[in-house]
Length: 343
Image (cartoon, rainbow, N blue to C red; front, side):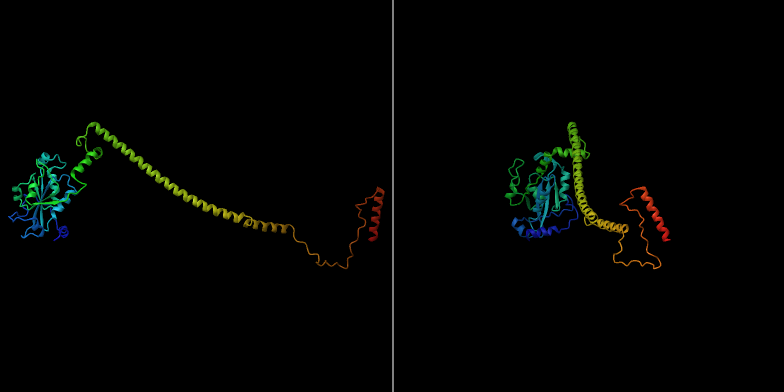
């Protein structure tokens, strides 16, 4: 079975409970078994049992690099049983340094990793033959970089010489030391954040002056955030006003064109108002000065019983007025006589 098919087979494994500790009764039986070579284990074990692979470490701040290393150790062989040893706080503080998580937290973190079948608490710093025999370990998995500690250039040297060492690949870019370095580098940021979340200065081991400084910086950051929010809202408001102003200007232009067109249609040179005014004015002129009768119209017939109107020769001549009062009186008398004769 190749490595990919082994991973696929393992991914479908049903996991119902955390991995047990080595001293619990739910662990697999550690009956005597024959010694295996790496070649035999990779080709398939001759006996009906899984290959027991051991991986150890501190596993502080359990992260993806740890999980990847355990996954590689679990899938080294087609049928394997992974035991993980975790060193105690005493050994770790003595040989490596102070940890962020205590041993109980580190033990529990390993139990909930899907690749782990069994957890060995208080694992030894250097693997002894007695420890390997006690847990019936076939192979030890670790990265191939020499691990110098406890006065030795490589604590896995005797394991390699015995042919029980299988290497895994170290995940670059992440480690417990890298995570701690980030925390130390950004210490002020995390201290301010935890103070803001309700932790006391005593719990954070922060002095009185630093506490006041951090709290002041938090207030300044809040003010900056408020100003930033106001600026963003102002920009949004200005953008909305600009959009609405563009719409209003466009609508005003459309309405103004419509108004000017309507005005020209009504009051323009050939508009409806001028035509209406001309029609009304012509009607008024016709009412004030009606048309004369045509010249060729027949005259009214005169009655034969009546005589034509007499010609009044007695009317004074406007162009030649009487020269004297006597002449005027004479003319008047002659007019009166003429009237009597006519009667």
